[in-house]
Image 1 (spheres, rainbow, N blue to C red):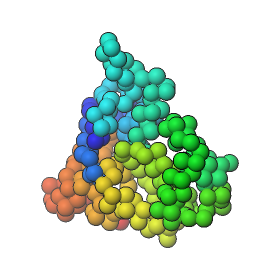
Image 2 (image 1 turned 60 degrees about the vertical axis):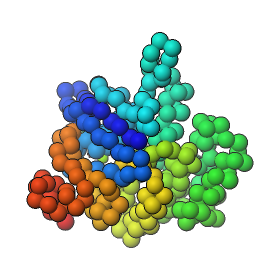
Image 3 (image 1 turned 90 degrees about the horizontal axis):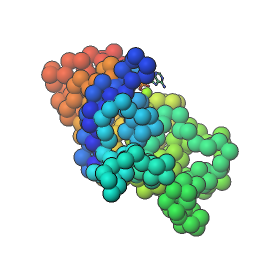
Image 4 (image 1 turned 45 degrees about the vertical axis):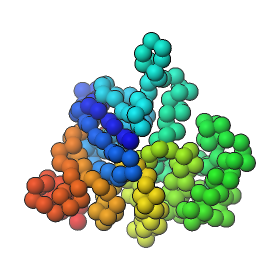
Length: 250
Ligand code: ADP
Ligand code: MG
């Protein structure tokens, strides 16, 4: 469902992604771990083309992101086409990135109306259902500053889902939260996993990764250096670098 092939991303002379390929089949969850600065956020940002890459390609559900199939072969997608392609890729950031001057409801409905062409009534109904699912019924009129970090992140997840994405990318979704609020966000993510959402999750929550992920990849200096099932990566001696990294985390 997500297929990134041979991604290379440079910032000047610095290579942030060094020929990264990764596939996440439909309904599977891939956890991405690695030290700060290893390129995890850059990978997610390149998957939805928030950052252009030097080379490589990304396909979501078989369609190449950033490109449109034309009569004379593929060509660069227009801004409008790119917006539609990105709508298939839900993104959740460490710092929520809600619009501060919009209410919770406005945060959810603007993009589905603008990009998916939903009427206000349709968008509001979809948003209300999603807010109920993330445990925020009745908070439609609140502003982000009136909510806890955990509540804001649940709004951000509901906002991403309001576009009915095919896949979800999470970039350290609980790293900015007070410890007692981490669980409420992980519970929402676990429900998404159970529903069969295809997900890539950058996280240091190893209990979540162990239980929810089908595959864990360990990133170092812009490369995937070890990967496997949680059992393989976390417990078997064949993944020494991941285990050394994790033992430093504890
Ligand atoms: P991670 O998410 O694993 O902590 P990032 O993907 O944010 O790492 O960053 C990987 C490397 O790329 C870091 O060394 C970072 O400084 C560099 N980098 C990220 N974004 C930019 C940018 N816009 N300009 C220059 N360097 C960047
Ligand atoms: Mg990061």
